[in-house]
Length: 72
Image (cartoon, rainbow, N blue to C red; front, side, top):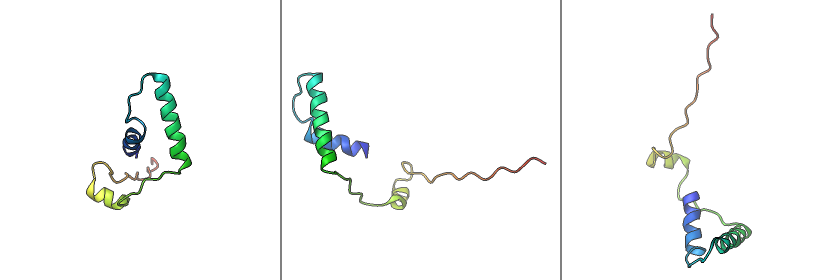
């Protein structure tokens, strides 16, 4: 999700020459405010199960721990 948002920010906000840090901070804050006001969402093309099937290394199955036995 972060990579998608960074890509959107680059295309919508950072596609210009920004002369200094103060302007950069201002531009990003303005973009962020507008993005939040628009309630921007990411439209997923598939769910968790398909992600685990197709992208197993990135979305591994959670490990369930077995309860520990009490010592005898």
